[in-house]
Length: 371
Image (cartoon, rainbow, N blue to C red; front, side, top):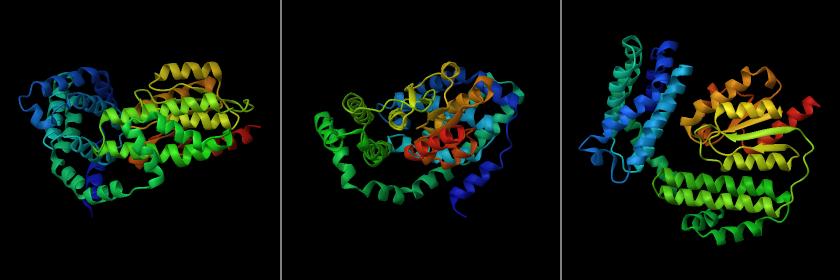
């Protein structure tokens, strides 16, 4: 049995926390994040634990940990911890964090739980955090055993993709715009451009960031240039008049990666839909209020980061409980489900993790079924 399989099986044996404990955790989540932030900031060895200039990344990790734990506690699927934690360890270790940081962080969370939660709820949740500390060495071993596969992924270079990646990393927006102009003449060119260029190029950019081959600034720069390309497309390519129904496309609340959702919105418009594109980090209540007003046939939510799955589920559950939206179909996709495929099993949507083109085909089927 591999260590990864053992890790998953061990996590699956954890006793699910009660709904009361989960609710207390959620109610006190922001206070506990601040508690953990304060405990870590006060440590004299902080730079040894997280490296130089990584304070903002550490604070992001604490917030993301809270988001993901809320999701795990809500669904009671602790094997998700075993799937996500190696990814967290690897990503932050690649960016200069010591492996020793993680048990220190978890210990601070244990202290926060004892401070802010009732004794009964704290006892339930401490079992989960004790499991994390007890399996720290195994988590490190899993990450280290994956290094060879990681090296192969990074070494695998597609020159068609690299032709775009190089100017994006260098910030050569003129060069990227020139490449886009070469590829795009009419709306008929867009599906292939989105599927064969934008998707693999941004996947490569994300991989380079994940393994610390490019900085956060370079990743943001690349994303900003691609966003400019997408805006240029809308001003230079004529889209058809909508003749199907209404759709809403949004990134999940707390999700700031929006290129995937923007591409899906454009492709839906190309296929005749009237698309309301909401962009990044729209609160769940506001998404649902707009949906009640527009009565869309389809609502699509994009999730790039695993930590945002819970906020996507909040949107979906509100849609499901709204009697005015009983006819609205839902689809969810994004890189989070490629990173952690098991996340697909907990999403209450009609379609989970179809790529953009397959999502268009499914939306077409739904339209035909309704008409």
